[in-house]
Length: 466
Ligand SMILES: [Ca+2]
Image (cartoon, rainbow, N blue to C red; front, side):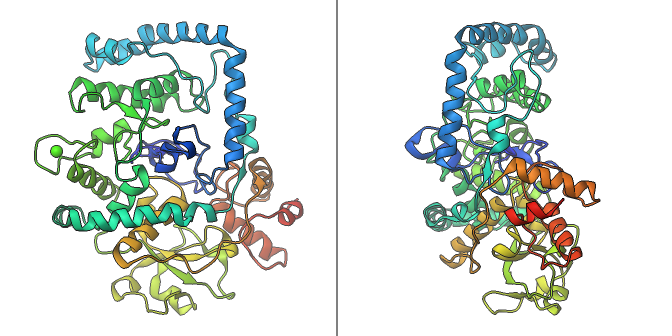
């Protein structure tokens, strides 16, 4: 998908990235988000480590909370409807017209559309943007459920079936973009279950609501909304295709509208980039997206490794790369006992430990960070890498076990981040998510204070950091 960041993937949505990294490009939604348990799509919490690891109980709580708000204020909902209509005509329409959108296209797009006040992260007129309390206090969970076999298995088996079915197209796509078919398939499967997911929201309602009522991302959603109008104005979508995820992502690869305009390609040669119905176009567009973000042809995404105690977990991060052969000299080895491939050994790699010392460790390549342009979460990129390996080489799981991490409140982690920041550590922003900058700063603080570095927050640590 190219779209979201929490939603991010393919829209450059400035996301409070756990990485503190550059803009992902889309708001992405994934298959689980699109089709949550019970079959009804629902808003999900922000992504990051632990995002995507949603708890049913928490979601229920959130939904109940939102529902109670909606029920409590029917009158104000009607008032907001009126304000929305006025905003469409006096604010959005002039800009759309200047971009060549016709009155007819504009009116049809918003015919009968009212704001969806159940979307997360909205700020009502007259209110100040703030982090919702529910979200603010949300726990981040253990990464383990993110890699549940029931989630991984259909992506891998569906991918293997399509690797045969679309072998010719995938070979041509790899030749043109350098992106292996297994990676393309893993993303397609993860995003929409190879098209099986029901995409039920109206893109103009989602994007219109967010452009009108989002707190800090109004401008981004406004650009996406104008891009969605442009798609319709130019007749680039099949009739009735402007359905989206709750984040506004379109089609089987879940591209945000701006990403569709920039990165979607026609691969079956009929003259249209059809990310809704054409498998070659869907696969070609995913590959083209990654190629546009710098996929390095011929390199892997990464390798699960063992990291000896003598190597500090604080060496993690895309800005602390070393030649992979130099990592190997420090004692880092692949878990399968094989040496790193010759073409990788001489190239740059990065230590990646998403749960610090409490989970599997990886040496990743620059392509890992290209995957994060699709969705900024480390766990998402790992899910894609593992799924691609399963599609190509058969089912397996990570060797390292995820420890009992998680269960902490994001607000508590954010407080610890602020304390570390005051002490001069770079935590990449106090967002309550333990991204690599926070992880390695924890490790450095632990080492400075005579402790063994774990590079991950836990309750004892959060009390100790003062
Ligand atoms: Ca086509």
